[in-house]
Figure 1 (tube, rainbow over the protein chains, first blue to last red):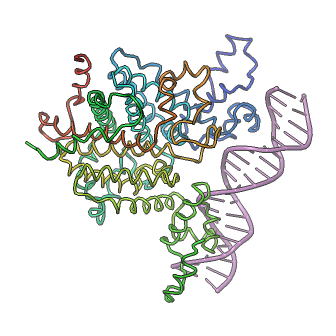
Figure 2: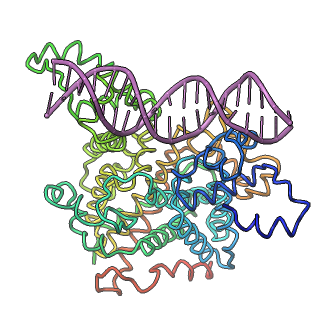
Length: 257
Length: 257
DNA sequence: ACCTGAACACCGTTCAAGT
DNA sequence: ACCTGAACACCGTTCAAGT
């Protein structure tokens, strides 16, 4: 595939005619396959065929399939994080996370991969970037780690719900990323099994995945802001905190106006 | 395996001597294998051998491996959610999520499975249960879905970080669930690549996974509590909200006392 | 050193044949 | 109807052989 390279690029840069196999070229080709056909389409045989080489040759440049997927995800993440600058940290976090969400929904294999390998470079990039913004937000040092990891974990959880590789019920065509569209899980005896889901079924059908994602980010940002204001008596800055810092939630429950 | 059954159970209930293959028995055997050897250990051949049958026989009771894993995860989740009762909803949510966290860290295959199949029964159980507690918490109906999904997504994100199947660097023996222990990712040129992670490296090494998980839950609970108090002007109760309901986070950033 | 591609080990799944 | 187990299709990975 790579029509561009064959037609124009070779002609413009004759010295690059040697199409030597490099890790960068392999990862690039892998991304093309992944974006086009999903996670299942990426095979060492298919990849080798696209690169006009043998399957074994790839192992001279990548250790195994895990490293290949990890590198592909890292490159995608780097692109997403590149265009997300802003002066205001909260705005940056919104733009950042929205960009990751868009990339995941556009390329479901990325969500699967982020979630499949713990703390691969792509996740570290995201974590570091969010951590920097959280710091800029004014969160005290002792809580920065907690705040950043809450955001990252939330994003990873959302990412996990967009894996298209495994279909438990392939009932209808239109499948919202959230909960199988209509009939199967919420009828008959499931009314007793899933009382909450049945009750909010209307929202479940009508809701917009992106709006829901944003709502979750706002919930966490609110919690982080409170974290910033309350962490003043613990003072020290060590890792250990005496108790869950949010007992006022429990307290407020009683005195409804 | 199954020493208990062979020794005592058969003797007590002679009428159950027919060890007919059923989905329940297959799932039970699968869980035994998964808990003992992890996700990679579960094979139709190994499972059939444990059940003293042929591999093909299993397909008369389960459609495929995905259904088997989904059923195994659902059973584990049902057990966890069974013992987590409390009168106070916030306390229930803490107990509930802590139980799920413990189960995932004890059996990493469960975390992988929760994250591998979108909206399988195990996740629906968790979502429904959390949604019920969120409702009891007094969150207005329009925001219950957002609140519950934020908590569930966070838990799924944490679950994704405990997958032991794929090791990117198997450097040291002790691997905290969080970020590879020490050397590899945070030395040399990575100081520039991961400035935030390098700065908080101390917390990264010393932190406790469970405390971090709790901290994230508290952050989200705080955000949910605020959601409950602020959603008063939007009034209607429909799905659509005009804007991110948490602009006061941005506002508060300026006027530090 | 880099590449080739057949071969190996191991999956999930199927299916003709038994009972 | 339920079970058997060999066979099929397809992986990731290896490795003797080439250049």
